[in-house]
Length: 209
Image (tube, rainbow, N blue to C red):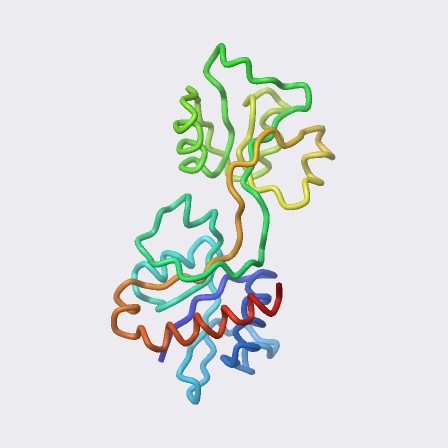
């Protein structure tokens, strides 16, 4: 059995549809139930749902052979895995945002609120900017409004939440999308099956384009 970790939620449903169209269907996954693991013995695959931010952990530690994780998770946690394919779905951008009137004059340490502390640190260290990182877990947009931070680093999809809170994107750091990833040992020992899946999924990506 090839174990495949899928991210729970809307993105996971899109990802599963790609697997299904690629010929790796598992009909029981669409039944209304609370099961987390679904098998198709004939195809030799087992899907399971996990929290999106946990997919890379399951793959890195070998509980899953392959999985689908957002590029944001891969950049933030730097798991020791192979990145096989950009699925070209779940597209958004990692951005620096702030109040519309804010300008970084570079005269004092910049206060940055984010839950993506590694991505923020990497970005600002590359441009040589001194920062004070404030790690938050939710409602990041509040930080600059209440004066907790100068800017935020966060995922921006449509920008609606920023606009509604009188914030705007100042810089796009990196584009984000869903990636097919593989455990390194699995790729060595089950490489043929994994390559087959990657090629079938690649066709879906091209088809969706």
